Image 1 (spheres, rainbow, N blue to C red):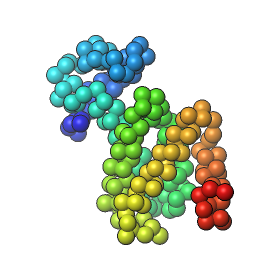
Image 2 (cartoon, rainbow, N blue to C red):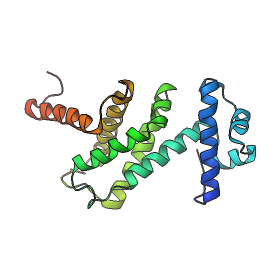
Image 3 (tube, rainbow, N blue to C red):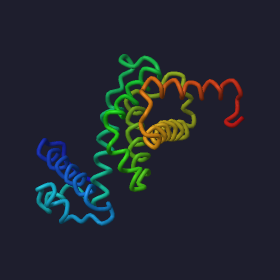
Amino acid sequence: MYHISRDKRSAQSAQLIYEGLMECIKKKPFDKITISDLQKASSVARTTFYRSFDNISDVLYWKCDECFREVLGEYRPDAYPDEIEFARHYFGYWMGHSDILELLIRINLQDIIYACHMKNAETLHERYGNLQGAPMTHGNYFMAVRTGFTISILTAWLEGGRKETTEEIIEIVGEQLAYLGRNGKLYP
């Protein structure tokens, strides 16, 4: 797990380590990268690495978590009065920050994406309570469905070559939800 204090210096070191990891990945497969490789690429001391991270995968978990904290942390009911507005914000954010998601998919660590989304989605629930109109008697299922839904959409977009705009994604998803609503079943 990562353990980075909230001071500016720790955050800068973590970012340098992440950037060093991105440089290393250009040269060799993720599972072949060593702490020494990261140290050379980032110019961050080995002790600094271990002060912030337990292993190399933690660097990816940290970066993904930071992105989800940023995109979901910007949620305010007054700024995004409905789900469409929040979807625009959410997918628009990821269109500009997709590098971490692409990497996690490429190296088969999608579980990090899911874990970071769930962790930060729970923060929304803690901060704002139940989302309007959302039945929270089974809140864990509600969060799991929403997380799986949004992660799957992002994954399909990335694997499809990142062709669609935010508006096109919202339209596609809207069509699928309308079909589900009309037919009451998942498959034709």
